[in-house]
Length: 465
Image 1: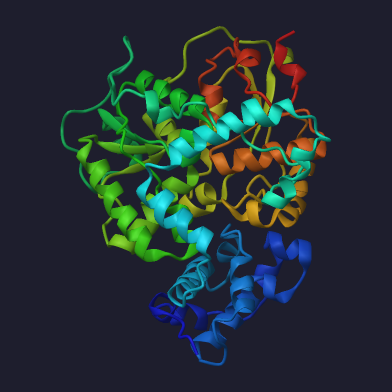
Image 2: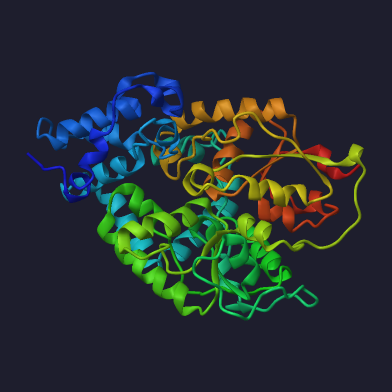
């Protein structure tokens, strides 16, 4: 029999803390759709205990059940014993990898494309050409589009478009503060024990970690983040040799490769000479803050303060958008916020994004029901479990419809991808954007209509008429 692996064995006590109370059943988005015991945390922990006690081998069935998890952390929050189910799931996947159960294709993606990084941008440029030049030229009924399911892509799915040029291909390595930006940073050293607001306000420079999805799919969002940081009065460092944060590798259980990626990223971030790290991706931020601590044993993950983009702006306490006039209440654009799991439950950041949104005077902020409920994206989960992810997403679509908004914003590119597809499948006339995209539009939102990316829905209310 294959043993459970070191990562799972050292977490045995976590599995033993579960009292099988069933609280996880009430919050698990997967259980809500398929209602089987092995889909929920309690059932998975029972399987994990059996593996730890040598009653069950690391079989294909065990693999299948362990992979069926969004890592949304809702079960962890609902557990009266605070059992870190997410850690047990990842440790189980690590055992599967050690047992040789990492599929060949996934192994190539994780250990070659993401680990080395250099091949990913040119491959995405090819994908961009295929999308823009080849696929668009064929009608929906064409034989080429009929082959999409064979390639693992659902024919009716709304797919993100790869950028013709990645953000990092053209980004300057250092962007100085914008002329006239308020210089609030303190030149005096900040105590390691200072609160996050003090650290943010004292920062004179920030290194922007772009993240794979933002770099390759949403370069406009990346430019908006750099612009806003410059207007907040910090010099922005954008190292060209940055790559993947390691989240997909960690999620797959390949901790050896993840440690190598983490060590390279820490060296790159520290080598920038910046005061703080800022990222616009919830998963990147969570991985830096929490997973790097486990992988490398470095306090704080990177040895530097790490901020989410919206968190940094909120703590910074200065306007980071161009000044403009106010709209009347009647002409304001209704906006709601979807909370990424890795930001709200993962990092405990909930109010800061709302604070940034409320600072935009052309917005009427509307709270959405179950704003922290997982949208079904789960990183690569929606790629391998599209029907289930879509069913989970329909609940989010219902909440968006009830809110009656023009724009849904979030702080995670994976959520942007999922929510755009969810909105399209549900026939919702809404735009789905990152918070930075709205910040780039200024206080009055005069350029809202022009700034909307293609494929987000008509959103006719955004015309300003």
